[in-house]
Length: 295
Length: 327
Image 1 (cartoon, each protein chain N blue to C red):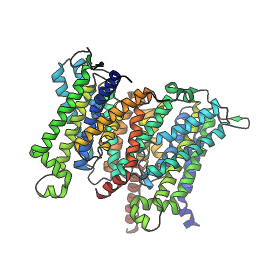
Image 2 (cartoon, one colour):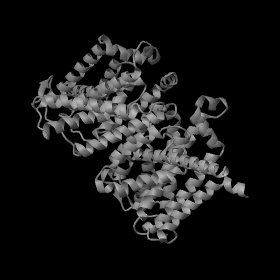
Image 3 (cartoon, one colour):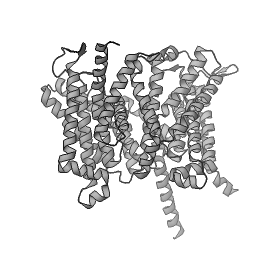
Image 4 (cartoon, each protein chain N blue to C red):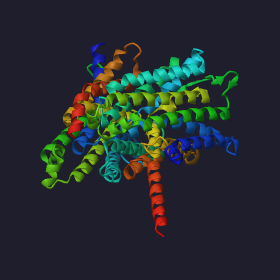
């Protein structure tokens, strides 16, 4: 592998990893606050992508308003999902909550297929198609938008959690919901905020990814799963860990494909993430079981 | 006599229902709904396994379609490509799928709840990728056709009418076996595991072993159903075994009432009728409806639709009787 190829694969890995990072960030935030794994997380990436495409092409909106509106709609759907599907199931078991979020994901996917588009769509690039040369590698400018969006969002989320009152309340609720409700933090409101935040993050991932990779209403499952892998690599411990988990997964995935080893050609790219998922779950199973018991 | 009848009412009821379904095609039903009924029978077999796993034992599987697909593909490949007798192919498929489930069972059941759900989802997707990508064996996304039918002597199960009886015979056997398991010591152990794993272990139930056994059983059921599926259709493609298929199987189990062997027929029936008959006319709204069903049933009746209906009926009957008793 030449150094130019190396750079090419590395950047491709960081690019797809950035999207996984955004999804993983959403998983981590929701899990920390409400102990729910939101199986619909990937659907918000799909929504972001398809909404921005639809708003630009069918509604004819300019780029910036279309993007902002897409994120707002995705966040609103996240809020609706929490209020209509999660909150009414008050004392539901873990199994029931899994089925509920799977149901919500299926519903969102179906609606997107019906109301937005059934085809694979690709939004227009933010800043042209002319690729940039960097250390001998050819980079799609959209890749830079994706990486930039991820870095910016991560910094904003970090500042939000560390310096604002709401962010601190979220953190408090994640550490101890009972104690935080004693000092006036409503865990239900915090869970709502977490869902809104996570779906907005997914939506952002979708709108920056859509110009690079064509998406359809069925793209959500795999993206959600990879985001989960990102969060699992980070151990659901901290948002930053999820971000690094996402980047790691993206890089591993791309280099595994690049190695072109034996029968494992690019058609097995998705299988790599799944194998990583199973390995991580099994390696960490002892610790995860402990957490579950404590939580 | 009466007491023993009462104790065995569910056996009688199962036999009655199956007899009903088996006799139906002689009537006007024949021709119109035979194919639908075959699919209901096949999906009932898979759903029963999922009910045992999810309802009784409390373990989520979001990848059950993988076992269904393994049965289908192993059967198809052996009988078509290698010319193995379809019955033998079916048996080998069941053994291989069961063995696969048994082997993955031990590591996978070290996980619980959310992580178990994710792991089974991942496994299901891996199998689906294999069905699609191993095209030299499976025919890839286009699938493979010309799979031989099942036959006994010179009697070939090549028409819908003939397959109908075969499928429901299998279904009957599977339901009876499951009913027996649920009412046996094993069934009580499974419910104990659902209640509390720690408590079950403290009274000497080998929790992991039971979970793995029931996973294996559900995989064998799914594999048999898959084999019946391909030998009936004589065609196989990856599409019926994708992630959505696993979700549909969960819908069937949820409608049927998770902890109910019986409800499986109801769940599979309601779901197939919904997607094959009612919603087909309105485009692909079935996905949307499935999502709604999952959310609503889980919020309002987590024990399942069928079980809830049965409960309402019993309450109604009880009230009616009490009124009768005090005139």
